[in-house]
Each structure stands twice: as C-alpha cells, then as structure tokens.
Image 1 (cartoon, rainbow, N blue to C red):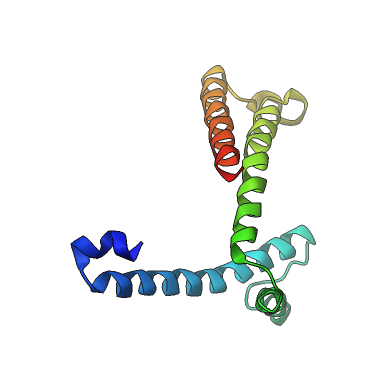
Image 2: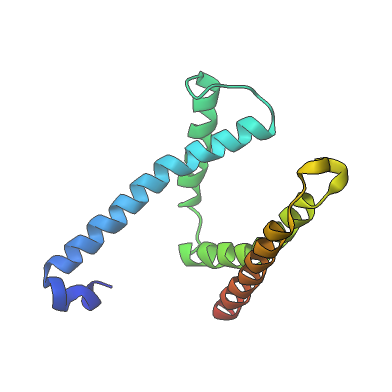
Length: 140
C-alpha cells in the first residue's frame, strides 16, 4: 500500500501506513475485548456495570485469550478469510430473519412492517445476497 501512495506522499507513505496500522491495532485491541465483555454480560444476564470488577475480568480474559492465540502457529490471514466466509454466509440469513420477525403478526401485532418497509427490506436483502455472493466468490 505504501508503494501505491509513494507518488503522492514520497517516503512519508511508509510512515503513514505504519502509523495507521498501529492505530488500528491498538483501537481493536481495546474495543474488541470491551465489546465482547458487553456481549457476555448481556447473553448470560450477569447485570454487571462496566465499572464492576467482574466486567473488567471478563474483558481482560478475552484480551488474554487473544494474546495467547498469537502463540499458536497460524497466519492471521486465515482468520480473516474465515471471518469473511462466515460474514458472507450469515449476512443474508440475518437480514432474512429480521424480515421474517418484522412481519410476524403474532409477535409484533399491529407493529409489523408496512408495505414500504417491506419493499425497502427486500432491496436490502437483495443487496446483502449480492454482497455475500461477491465476498464468497472473491474468497474462493
């Protein structure tokens, strides 16, 4: 990437890319365990506030697991490819599930989707299927 930016930024291109990658890594290392701690807290209905020591322990355990995974002999690219495949499969499934739930008269009663919302949802579903196909084709 730095070579592609070199005509515009010269030798600073490598430094800029390095700073960008370092910043992305640091923010991900902080936010991912925190987000995962929120998910664990809500999925298991623990009722912990973000300032509670138990919440912090969950976040630190997740961070430690991520750091321990660096000791394994795998390439991070394989994890990224797996995540792309999973996202490519899950995205249209989740959009379809939301569409079905939004039209479920038994659950939502009078609050089900209107005709306009269903048309927009259909467009979103078609786009999500297209993105999934594009992602899966590019991975394989």
